[in-house]
Image (tube, rainbow, N blue to C red; front, top):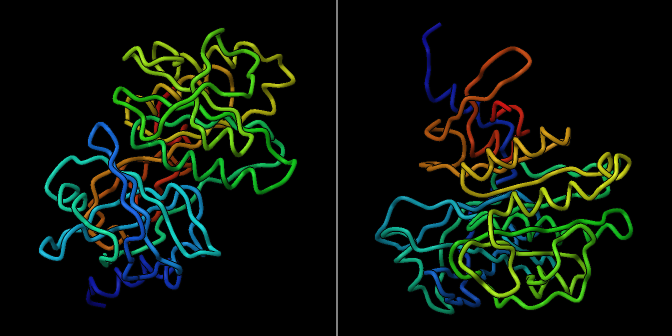
Length: 303
């Protein structure tokens, strides 16, 4: 039989049929924050209805730019039909995206990717986000709080530029966190979810150092019984994820990481975003877009 590349691509993507939608998202709000960061709210009801923590969208930044950009979903409202995206201006695509105004339409594909998987036997999730890896942690925290009484998450965020929100002293005390480390995201307090911030830029109330060092303080305060209830979830720059994976391994904790990778098609056809993953059958190349972006940390990082 002759090899048919179109047939192979069709087979590769068959499991994702019916789960990724193309929509014309209408800009509902577009906020600029220090550090060239922006929060974009789009009316995209199909995506909002089915997105899960860890999902992302592939968005057209400008009609004159054919290549889309992958952006993590930070929040959704299935009832109101909107999604929030946090991004940082890095190049021509996101620079053009930053000029989009309320009422404009943007083509997007989503939701894409395998989401985080929470486990009821680990009711104390530790969520660690860094930089533009913060959005999936907010989405996950929002999802966990909807399961009333099941989870008690702690959200730790790190950034070396100003945070894309106005930090304030948290009213929620967190045993095991160093004294004086009180800065948090106001939204988390509104949700009654404890959170703390880390940076090396001297921001008031933040832990002075890496977010993984702050996580270590908290983990070291737990007894053996409590540690068995913790699972780690993380998204951020590759070096931070590697540090998170090592930390989780040191404390013998399960850990899921969401990878950041350059993408072309983002729907599994081009295989331009492959990474090496360790499987029971040995090393394999997996696509970050549809096989991920969420992976078990031990399959990505040697610890």
